[in-house]
Image (cartoon, rainbow, N blue to C red; front, top):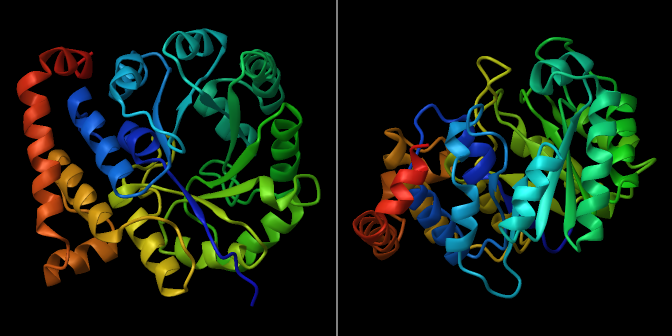
Amino acid sequence: MVLPRHVRIVEVGPRDGLQNEVKPVSLAARRKLIGALAEAGLRSIEAGSFVSPRWVPQMAGTAELLALLPRRPGLDYTVLVPNLKGLDAALAAGAREIAIFGAASEAFSRANINCSIADSLDRFAPVAERALAAGLRVRGYVSCVLGCPYEGEVAPEAVRDVAAALAAMGCHEVSLGDTIGAGTPLKARRMVEVVAERVPVPRLALHFHDTYGQALANILCCLELGISVVDSAVAGLGGCPYAKGTSGNVATEDVVYMLDGMGITTGVDLGRLAAAGAWISRELGREPASKVAQALMTRDEAPQSVTRDVASESSAAETSGSADRSHGRR
């Protein structure tokens, strides 16, 4: 078995996770979550999106959020943009990396963004072109790579074609999303093998949901192909509004625990990560979906000082950040 020595984790909880949670959180809480994740060692964090707050109210105030986040070498924040208007807002806010997205399923594309796959790619081509010209990095997402809530099975060749189109636009990385969490290991492996016919493995990432409890097994199977970038969400935040019954993204705590046990480095401190997940879960009024986080809480293994740090930072933000709270309620 040949496995990568290091895996870069892209933390998607603050955007893909929180935007699909029923209970919105304040801008101050979003800021403190991202700060805690950075302190845990995560260096690639999906911070927000420039989608209209009318459609995604949980992401209101992303421009203000970017201005508040810590900036340091090696710490990257990505924001999702749906169109040129969103790109303009991202540029004005000082974003350095954006993400664009497509689907491997025609039905899902129409339900999600009200256009065909071909039209969605045509829409994103000028977004990518302008972003690259402005010096931004561009990341691509493909949804429904292992199944669609409307169409069922999705052919790996369909995933390959969308991924290749995004790569051709200049996306430095294409993240393959099992949106409904229906994939199983050999199907996941076969999908990646087919996509790799057109997009080199070093430019691919995994974005697996855990609806059927298969995400970790699917990730492991694809790591054996050389994949070394994994998207995940602290506490297993998220879901999919267009796929009823789906659970959230695979939990970052569970991914880190698995990789640590395999001797694969991530640079992430599991205790601090679990504390951040426990805190945001309390903000949402529920328990973390992460099995590892639940085990650590039961055994009281999560460093209590970290939990106190996160809680005290949030309290201070709520005291001094009234403007943040107003943005968070938009």
